Length: 130
Length: 130
DNA sequence: GATATTAGAGAGTCTTATAGTCTTTAATAG
DNA sequence: CTATTAAAGACTATAAGACTCTCTAATATC
Image 1 (cartoon, rainbow over the protein chains, first blue to last red):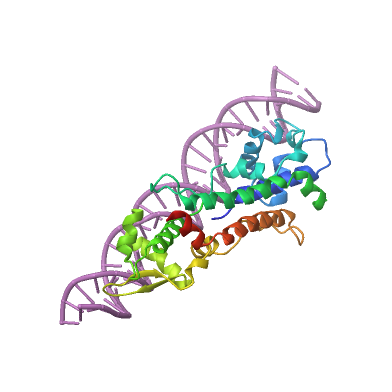
Image 2 (image 1 turned 45 degrees about the horizontal axis):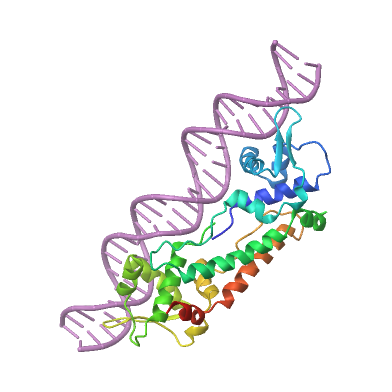
């Protein structure tokens, strides 16, 4: 079990956007170079973030990506959910009784992690990284 | 990102062993039937648990698997680590400066989850499941 | 309005990990 | 010695991740 590379790219790209003081949008080309990844691939990832409303995009010359208003309160969990999906890490597909105790424990532990990821906002991250 | 099915099988099998009052070892055949999975496949999973010292096995007629002494204090995390491995869920492979802040946050959240999984012992589980 | 530039969408490929199966070997009880 | 059971190894199938390539849509600038 591992986070996908896409999640890593998403987190780093969003951080890059947060640290860029530029009011102009930044092109995927530029963003991709910093991570050493292909622009078309990164664009797919960014599109997901756009759909979740964290990032906005403009097509055309001088276009690119920028963070939306309120970006400071975006959490790690938001970004991770956007890329990995929101479903639980553990699913006991076995049908044995109504309540799988194992599932319950797994879910609870997962929630501890999510709690922490929800607490960490982009604002926090930008502060420690500038 | 998902836990593997193998982890699910491992957790359930260990629970089954814990709940079985029998002093005799239980064969993989029997264990596999309860989970509706093939015996040879389950045996591979069990072998990992044997190697980690959580489960003991005897070959030959009337052989099978049983929990080792001290099984009550085995934690969820022990079992998960035995199957999934111990490495971190997130690895920022990008080389940018000495300390990746993102990695730090991810690691911390992961540790919250592990903390919870370490707290949950087989004894707890057996109690609520009997 | 034509052109250059940039994001978005879709199909296709390559690689890796998971989830198994099948077969053979080793241990042990009776 | 034989039946039974775990362990090991090689192999296959499926699915997901990690891309690439190509085409389309939007938009700024001339």
